[in-house]
Length: 114
Image 1 (cartoon, rainbow, N blue to C red):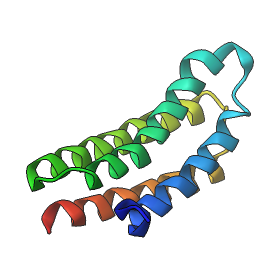
Image 2: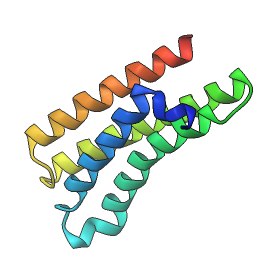
Image 3: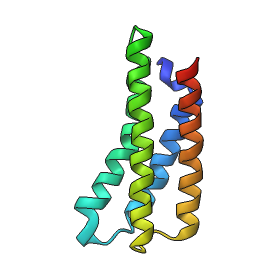
């Protein structure tokens, strides 16, 4: 088992990625390449950078990748706002994803403080 598989924040980020993927599927084809793919990539970047942090040997390197993951959370939230504004995702779905990403952000902050 890899170290990152034990982290609740990594597990949660993978769950959110699945929810994001469902949301992205409803974005019109015209916006799939720009907004849809960027939303997928930013969501994927969260779990990927958490995993990469766990593979580093120094605390400084580990923290760097946790910070990158946190930046990806912020990027994802921003893209969700745009998606909601354009009517591509429903307010309830936005609220759920927003709340989940807020929890992930707080969990990452906790990892950075330890």
